[in-house]
Image (cartoon, rainbow, N blue to C red; front, side, top):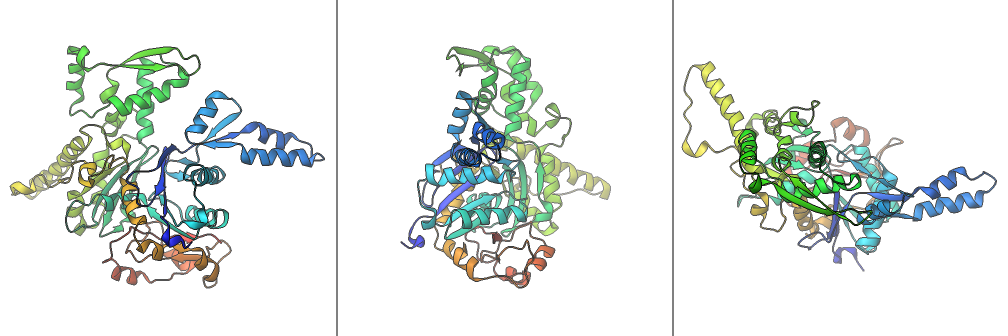
Length: 484
C-alpha cells in the first residue's frame, strides 16, 4: 500500500521523555522515558571469551543485541536485576550514544507503535543547536536500518511556536522558551526563520529542579529510601510545586501557618514494599525558584531566566524586537508550575522598564507611554495550553503541531525520500558528505547550517530563493541530510 495513504509516525525525542504516535492523534499514544537497559552479562561474556571459542563469543554478542529494554520496562528491569545497566542516549538535548538511540527507536517502532517502518513516513524532532553530523546519523539509521520511505526532521522550538498561534494572522514571530528535562533553550523566530545567532541555552532544566528538591529533602533528614529518592522528588515537583512572587513572604507564610502549606507525601519502598511518609515544605516554591534565582542551586550559572530571555531578544535584529517581546511561548513540562508565566512576565517587564527609564535619564527627557503599551512585554503570557485549546497543550506543545503537520498532505512532498536518496547525489561530494541536502518549501532553514557547510556539500536552492518561499508558513521545516 502507498505510504502516503497511511498516517505518518511522529516521534518527539527528549532528554527525559519521548512522545510517540501517529498523525491525527489528539495526544501521544505513548510517553516513555528515554532510557535503555542492556544486559551487561552478555557483553562481558563476549569480551572475555577466548578468540578460539568464536562461536560462544558470537552467540554472546547476538544475545547482547537482543536482550535489552526501553522506557518504563528498562527502569523496572534495572531495579529488579543488577545485570541490566541503564543508558540514557540523549543528554542535554543531544544524542551521545547512537547505538542506544537505535535500539530505543527499534523499541518505539516495533514494540510500542507496532508498525512496519517501510509503510509510514516519519517525522522526528531535534533541538535547535543540533550539529549537522547528528542529522546525518539520524538519516542513516532511518533509511538504512529501518528502510523508511520518507523522513522529515523539524526543530522542536519552531513547532512549539507554530502550535501556539495567538492571532488570527498566525504570524510566526516570537520567542520560544523550551524548558526540557536536560536543557533549556530560548529560540527567537522571525517570520518562521530561526535567528540562529541569538539562540541562548542555559544549563538549568527540569532535571535540575528535581535534583534540587531531592537535595533539600535529604538535608532536612526526611526518611526516604535512597533508591526511591529521585523518583519521589520528581513526583513532588509535578504534584506540589508552584512559583511564588516573593521568596521572603513565602517563607513567612510557611512559618506562620505550617498546617496550611506543608503537604504530606506517602510512598512505598520498592524493595520491601513497606510504606513511608515525609513532609513537603519549602521545596514547593524553592524548586521552581532555580529558574529565577539560580544562585541558590549552583554557583556555576547565576543568570536568571528572564535576563537570558531579554539578552536573547536584544541580540536579535532591532526591527524584530517589538514582535518578539509581544509573543513569548512557553513549552515543556517544567513551565507548567502554577504562576510560572506571571512571574516570568513580571520580571521581564521590570528589566525592560528599567532599561527604558535609564535611557530616558541619560537623554534628560520623559518617555510617554500609552496605557495599552505598558503591558506589551509578554502580552501573550497566558498559558500556551489555554491558547492551544488542547489537554496538556503546554507539556506537549511540540507534539501538538507535529501531529498537525504530519497529517497534512504537504508532508509527503517535503520529506526526504529514500528514492531521492538513491537516485540523486551531490556534485563532487567529499568523503563525509551526505548523499542529499534538501531544502523544504516551507520557508524555514536550520540555524546550524552555515554558508561554509552549504558551500562544501552543495545546495539545491540559493539563499535568496528561500526568502521568496517565506510566504508559505505551513509545516515547520528545516534542512535535513540523508545518510549515504
